[in-house]
Length: 333
Length: 267
Image 1 (cartoon, each protein chain N blue to C red):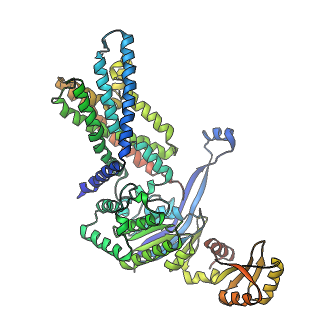
Image 2 (image 1 turned 90 degrees about the vertical axis):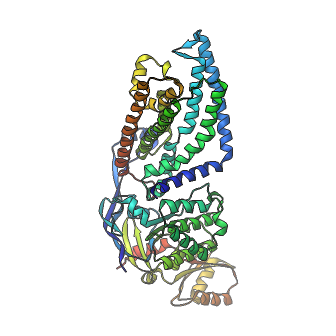
Image 3 (image 1 turned 60 degrees about the vertical axis):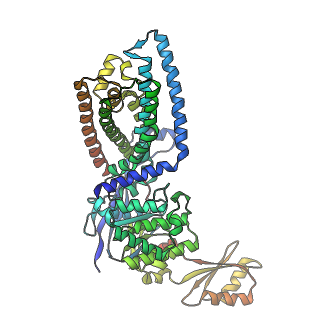
């Protein structure tokens, strides 16, 4: 194993105009020199090995995309060093581009009006992929997903899921060393998400491609990443394997139930029945926070079912946001 | 192998253009309407002038010039500024920057496909129609060869100017006003809307020192002059060539400097 990305103490600052309110303020802004410095990324270091899948997490505006843009060479760090496969990305952007692939969940790099196969051919020529490698890659794709129906479909007629799938295939086409996936499963249904996770996993295994994955979906992280990096407000909060993180949010799940009668009264009753969980009630639901290390959700549910008529139930995972909040509050060593 | 990298983009451009059959029809109708307006406008101008020849051009001369200018416009206008501006605003520019290719070249070659289609679908038919209707008022001699050389350089100058204006969008992050301004300036000062002969002397002199006349006036004057002095052709092409190089260098440098300033939206 060798390091493919090395980041040392990078910081990125943006100059943003201080905008004033109202029409008068907007007119003043035209001549304003009043800038403030926003630090989007603050002193981040990490080393990523060839073949790793790293989950890069953080709330919106945490600085994830900025870091990725620095790794791809679109942005230059204000200070610090980045090496991607031995290159400084912003100095050798074109050379770096040959070695990386990108998918931005909300945008497509495919040619909108053309069938997918034409986009593939274009990418083959642009990245100067030798014919044999291209054919091999297509054969690999065929073995992983059912691409035949997609190949001759214009991209603009594709569903979001098909388009995302195609974009991911396009990003891997020139067999890059690193692929950046920025929220690849955003807005997709459950089965498409699963399909895309399987595909990413298979391509990573097959080609030993390093994958940097940003997402808000803990399902993606669970399915793909061994290691996760969390940042918030530009600062690194956590960089370790996922097992370690589980200690923080780990095994907590929220079981929400709806029963007959006054909810807060019932909640008190339930609390006595399952003392190992903490129970609370709002207007609609009784929430039972279950620590799965102590008792399984099914166990708790079974217990409650005997004593209450449960009309409706929901099971909630702790979201990324909550995990990060928890980490933020408790601190990570 | 290297040229294939670029030609593949031309090919895609042609394919893309051919996907939208209806837009051709709409464009042809639009041009027709514009030309009808032009016809009656200049007819009125000549009628009020009371003479056959105004500023050295007859009504037919003027009309031929303007019809061909319109055809040339359809084929040369690449809407690069819109494209760059839109890409900056949507953030798609990041994806284009991450192609293993210089952005300036990437954009040019992405558009080159529309040159090819527009040339065959609008310019050539218009040219043939004009030649037939005017019974050979357009000379068909060596001037055609000079014209081709001239158009190639005009395309390059036009692209460089567009690219410079597009680069300005990196700073302003808005496109509309800048683009309209650019379009008005280029179309007026290049002689695309009014032949250069109709401008007052001093303005004409100024215009000859600007790059814009090399885009429309130069190729058209070469095309419409059947027996040019070798010197005239040489001066016209030479001027174009000089602007070609100058604008190329300028746009490349400006882009290089600006790229360092880039702050891509969102993130």
